[in-house]
Image 1 (cartoon, one colour):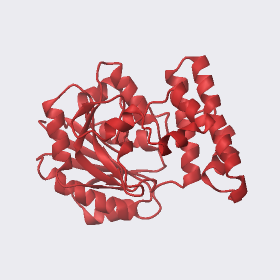
Image 2: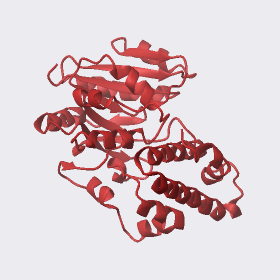
Image 3: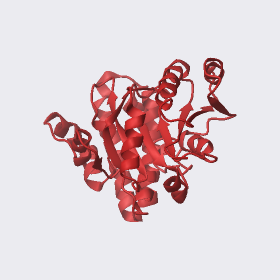
Length: 302
């Protein structure tokens, strides 16, 4: 069991991207004997599971008859793991050489944090600031609602989590995204893995908060890096609807009722502001147009 890893990849119509990632992971796990890769396919229609099975007979593919969402699919793959670690990697990522070994080495050297996240470069934007997740606060939701947030970013302001993402040393953080993260199996089972009421998005924030409640604070390991394409399984408008619905769920789960209500109102106000700003462009299927039009479907959460 020592330093063995079960790498988990959840796929949904990401055949070519997933093939590249699995190839990367096989190379990485060769340095960790006894490790394995498990792919959970969420009812893809593009031949993803068949392609992976044909290209990599040694990789276990588990097929879901329906799209279970990210957290539920990960839980399915993690349930019978006998490894010490679980490694979660998005299918639209490429792993830099040695990244997995460096992540495992850091976690072995500093046990007890529960979650260990690597650095990922957003290929489209050329940034790594999303390597550390930002927990919602009334302050950052107010900045979103008033339109101040993008102004602050243009002026060069970065929140403490964003600044930590640029660290060149291993550092403790409040939360990590689920894009590229190593989890201690014992800690994972202590908190019950992902909360499956989140179909997609914010389940990683929820996991970090529940881990923290057991005395474990995530560790960011910038020496372990991947490149992330992002958004391969959802359109911009659909993604925004999912993100908002999950964020509302997070607020109602972890915040007192009045505070959660205020947070939800600020979120709706921020989407509305961006919808108004988009009126001259006449793009009814755009990100903010879709999110505003479908607000009744997400402001109640999951």
